[in-house]
Image (tube, rainbow, N blue to C red):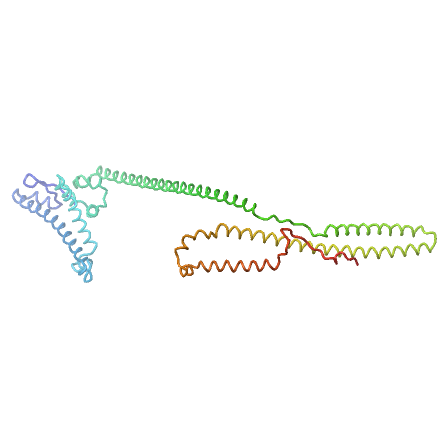
Length: 396
């Protein structure tokens, strides 16, 4: 609806909508002034009613939140009972909040700001009331009359402000994002430096521990008995015997070949018969030698396996014994508890389990001595020897 400004008492101007402006212009000066005074009061009452109405609804909203009232009725039910929707009630509250926000500024041009505020569209009033309007745009709206706001130039300026504000917000968001990424990378770098320092410390500890273990190993190698592993006593003798049997076997084979050649050149049948008898005899001897060689080889292999098992058992005993010695020497430090043991009673030591440890060690010692007593032979020393039975030397 088109609005025109008409003078009131030659001092103020009042915006009026058609057809009232034409009606008032046709009246006498006195009648027109009387109507315009009512128009001025109507605007004041209209503004006061809107503000007081919103303030009243805000009081109702706060009242229904009280513990004793909350269970009886809700704000929505209350406004519905007065033929008002919840959304309309909150719009009125937001308009009142905007009005009092402007009053709280205590600006010199407060009346102008309030008048401009009341002439704004209700959605804009609500945004000002809730503080959801850009501060720059809010200042411009509150200092611009309705007539100026309707001009294309002002609308373009307001749109530019919104665009610039949006651009600024995007830039702010980008800056925040970059700052967050920078902080993340800084934290990651700090964590990496911390991890590097931890790894360096762990590496130093590992090198120190390795050096300690190397020294400990050298010391243990000095104390560890040297195992002397020798082959069985008669191994070389039997090996020579096998070699000699193979030589004999080869010689007899050669002799058989010579006899076969002699048969082909024999002058008479008697010589042929003699050669054949000799060949049969040599072949039987060769068969016996071959069986003998195979039998000795099989028994030598068997004894060598037994000897290897014996050697491995000895090395295992040496290794485990060395570990036990190290554990007893370095981990089982009896003197570590010496001063504390002196302060405790026999019952307390028993409850602590120390006497159980002593009994366990004693029992293990007895078991170990019993096992060693079964096997150890006097004068065996550190030499692991093989043993071939005399029957291996027998020839079939």
